[in-house]
Image (cartoon, rainbow, N blue to C red; front, side, top):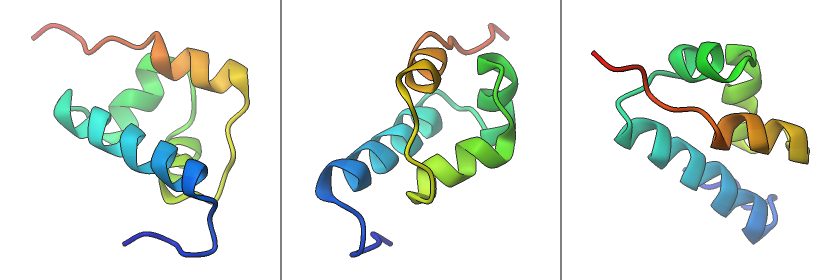
Length: 68
């Protein structure tokens, strides 16, 4: 459920990250491991509790699902 206290851009980023992760068939833990981040950081970004910096955005963007 969208958090109405978030800016539209931050909510859109959070929603799009979650949708992309789910489309890739990844759990938060799998995305975190593949991107070198902690699962709680992914959860906070997806919930809008954390505003990621560029380095974090690049780490997530470069993540590819493991073959299998």
